[in-house]
Amino acid sequence: MAEAFDCDVLIAGGGPTGVTLAVLLARRGVSVIVAEKEADIYPLPRAAHIDHEGMRILQEAGVAGPVMAGSRRASRYDFLNAKGDLLLRFEGGDQIGPGGWPAANMIHQPSVEAELRGALAALPQAQLHTRWELRGFEDDGTGITARIATPEGEKVVRARYLVGADGARSPVREASGIVFDDLNFEEPWLVVDVLVDDYSRLPTANLQICNPARPTTCVLMGEGRHRWEFMILPGETAEQVSEDAFVEKLLEPWNVKGAVRLERKAVYTFRARIAAQWRLGSVLLAGDAAHQTPPFAGQGMCSGLRDAANLAWKLAAVIKDGAPDALLDSYQPERAPNLRATIDMAIMMGKTVCITSKWGAFLRDLKFKVGRALGKLPDGPPAYPPISSGMIVAGSPAAGAYFPQPVAADGTKLDDVLGLGHWTIAREDLADPRLAPFARAIGGWLDKQGAEAALVRPDRYVFGTGSKAELDAAWNNLAVA
Image (tube, rainbow, N blue to C red; front, side, top):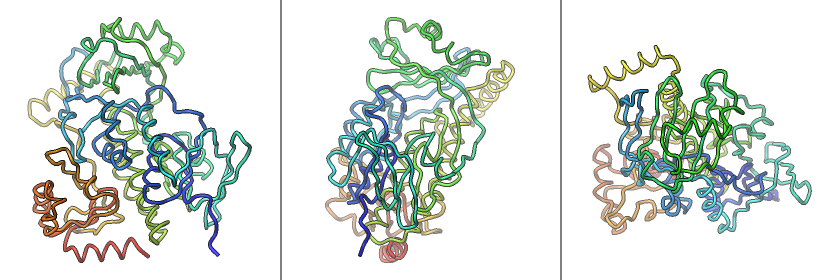
């Protein structure tokens, strides 16, 4: 007799990573319970940015439209020195990226979370319980038995898997004895969020002010908001820099008095850390529980969304389709190299910004000046590495690469036409009326790979290229027991 579980997957943490994962699982028929210890969504801004890949994941979750409606875009991301001279410029943030959405979208996190929770509430396979706090759990090899404190008293939940999406201080990670690999970046910063009354007096680009006297970030946020981040200097305390008078003095050079109203001020320590293990038996980690990145590349929430997309289809394959449990072992090997490259990029940006020595800043500025004169400065962040091991046909052209989402002239996107699950797209399929609006883009992609067909995984990374029959056979051999 099969064991009765309360749910297939118990998710500790009802933030954007946990709820996105829950939506993606429930849409695949996986039963899920989200246990969130707080009563409500944290009402103030936190994450500021979602890239085109993250928006594509939110598209699958059914919330990309309203999230996009409340977001803002900046065409440039500029690094300026103390004199205001341009050191480095990344352009194209408002252009459509490979994921089929604008490359850089500045958001209001509470609004994003509200949309995600609304989508989750509409799915009968999912439950979100607030004021539920995970107190402990046991993994007996066949599933998880979790003890949860609730307003009605302690409850016991039996689940096949437990996902810790419970933040940087993750009780799930701590209880599992999983340690962090510290990547040696730790800087305290003051974050100042404001409500905007007069946009004409604010910058329209995202800015890093590489001034050794006070490294500063100034970025757009979701509709109606803006953010500054100020590096806390040696000798300053969190209490000192959080005083209203201190914040007002920091904002003086921006000449925004009367144009903005203070919404939030908070001190954060920007860190770079990766958990040594993202899976231990029936326990998995995602989002900040598994990794933390400095904010300079805007990839914190994006990384959690990618975790959710990678985990969702694999958990569904194991639970619903009979795939071997070992499929979940590919999660960390696939995601960690991408995540490390993301963190490396953020650290590089951070080290460019966080120089407080005048001599060090002079040498940095000279280096960028020479690089600009020689035409050797990048015009955008480097592409993050493709998946190099795991659920791919190693050695086939484009295996592990991100498959782009073409957009038809009427705005229809490929994923909305082909839906959930994996796709095998061969050249002969391009005559299908459903694919006709995308045939040129997909045909061009296949030409570039010299391939007859491509099999695209549910998280929109390429499983492999080759003949349609061989790809389908390889997928069935790997993905199904």
